[in-house]
Structure formats: C-alpha cells, structure tokens
Image (tube, rainbow, N blue to C red; front, top):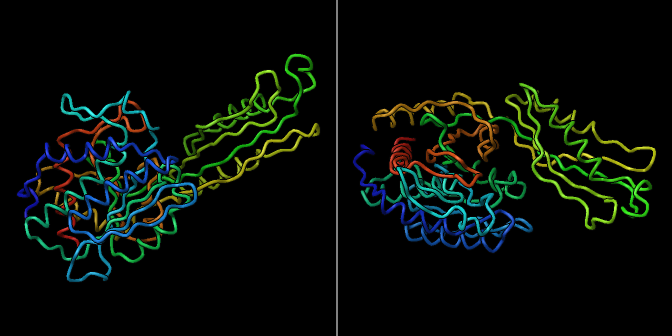
Length: 377
C-alpha cells in the first residue's frame, strides 16, 4: 500500500477540523471539554468505532476510548493517544478565530493537539474507505487533562497502553518536519507563602506580606535555571483586599531537565526552599505531577525506522530527536512501551494567540500516520 495514493482532501479535512477547534475546551471547563468529547465521539462512531465514555477525574472532563473493527480485535495492537483539552480559555476564538491565510490555519488548540488528533482519525478513515486492513487492531484514547500534567488520567493511560503493542501520539511535529523519540523530564510544584495580617493603611509595619515573600522567592527560583535544569513560575494568586496586608499567596512552578538525575537534583533544590520563620511566616513547596524522562530504546527506534521508511516513500526526510515540553508519551515511553510521538501537524505558536498549523502538513502527516498503521506488525 502506497500512502501517497490515499485521497486525503485538505479542504474537507479543514472543514472537519474547524468543528473541533471551534469547540473550545480548556482543561478546567468540564462542560466545554465534554462538548468536545461529544463531537469527537460522534466522528469516531461515524468512522465505525465502538465508543466507551469514561467519566473524568474529579473536577475534570470525560475521556473517550474507541476501538475500530478488526479480525484480531482484543489482541494487543496500536493505540492512537491524544488529548483534547487546551490551555486557551473559552472566548479565545474572539482573538484567535479559525482562519486560513498564507498557507497557515489558525485557531486555539489547532496545533496542540486537535489537528494531530483529527489527522490520525482521518488516517484510519481513509484506510477503511480504501478497503485496506491493518495488520494490527487500532484503538483510540482521548484524554482530558494532559495540559496540567495528566494527574487524573495517568493510571488510565498506562492501563490502556499496556494492552497494546505500540503507542502513537500525534502531538505537534518536531521543527524541521521531524518526530519525537524522547521527552525531557518535567516536575510541577505548588508554592504557598503565608504572611501575617494587618491593616495596610493604619498598621502596615505590623503585617508581613505573603505576596512580598512570594515575589522574592519567585526571583530566587527562576535564578536557579542553568544548562541542566530550568525553573519557571507560571501561575500566581494572592490577596483579596488592597487595604489588607495579604496573608496567603499561591503559585505554581515548573522544572524541566533532559536527564532524570538533573531533574531529581532540581526537585531537591525546590523542596529545600520550604522554611518556617521565627515570626511565624512560612514558605512551603510541595511536589506536584512529575513526568519521567523518556529516553528512546531499541523498540522505539524500530518504530521510528518504520515511520522513516513511510516518509521516504512519501518523498520527505523524517528527522527525530528528544523534545522539551511534556506529553503522555513520557509515561508510556519511560515504561518501555514502544512509543512514537510528534506525529502530529507542523506549525508554531502553540499556547499563544499565534497558534497555527501549516495547512500542507494536514494531508502529509495523515498519510504518514496511515502508512505507519499499515506497516506496523
């Protein structure tokens, strides 16, 4: 089977993808995420899949498991794994509307990773329409909390992945038209500064500002960044009344390293920042979700070689490498399950108001995925 012969229609695919992108689905908006899962479930069912809706973790949206008909159904096969939550709040479409211009298509979550998820579904659809049966059965897992580190779905991800021979993840493609064969380690931290209250106008000196304490710690945390391990703070919240010295301030920090040992040292440094001062004020660091480093093994590289062969037949090179930024392949790859990531669309600006895909990559990456599904045995 030559994947180049499959009749992917870019315009028709963009029309279908538009529905997904315009169903805004930020992680913490349960109703919005579930509306997105409704749309994806309907499209999967229309493609012939058997759908199972899985209630979401507490406070989060549902997940979807889908299985396509196959003579070897129930045997270990291929898991297409995607997340449909995004970092963009509902209303982002007003600033970042779905639009196509100059070879690009823009929209919230279009690159990370609704475009890749949609492309992988279209790959299965085109194989079925052409009457081409894959050697292995194909299943799909759509999750709802990847953007916050998958705290509620990790067990589901691993349970599902262990039932399959391969895991394919259509996260955004690596710059240079590549794929991802490894991921850096990532740790999240919850920060809490506790001060002492007073009236900000009448008795300012009697108070101890939690916001002030947090600000000083944030500067210290980000200054810890070096070549081996990075530290950043992305969320902060504190105080309620401007005329009160704030007694609490909360923040969230992220640390990333290429090697697990470097991340482990970074974790130690972060946890060592916890302190209780003589005046009763405190700064506390607690560890949040951690994604282990994923270093490619022989089996992952064997999957990559198959993909590289498909790309060669399609007329392009397929470089590979490790990448920063976490994905659920951190879990599956680190557990030794042959995984290939970064199979999704090409583009730039994800997590920003310039998020876009390269339109040409929509059909190209769908053909790559279709060829891989057909050749993995």
